[in-house]
Length: 156
Image (cartoon, rainbow, N blue to C red; front, side):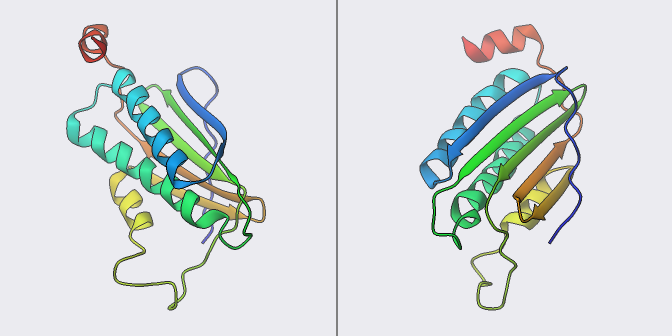
């Protein structure tokens, strides 16, 4: 499954970046928690929208940690970048692993819901796959900077 990936905007907005993090369940959870902390202080989101964004990012991280390097048998890395420019939040999760096409043998009733979930939670989802790896790009519209009073009350 290959779809075009949108380039991220230049560095004129708030950013969250984690590069070359070992792709495993522990680090995926740690990145998710660090991202949630960053998001809490950067955006004026209600609790439901906040949860939607964090859950979508968690799915992208979990898929990378579980599947990206499965066929190679070696440890790989995850890169995550979130950029807020204007009212748009764009999150990219990138790996250098292999895309695994779903087959009847890998599909089950209890698996395979991550991509549809990310698609439902985000305003736009693209997945770009190539021999160089996979990039998941999640976009969320109507993401506005938190007012300073709100940031102070969340941090304090």
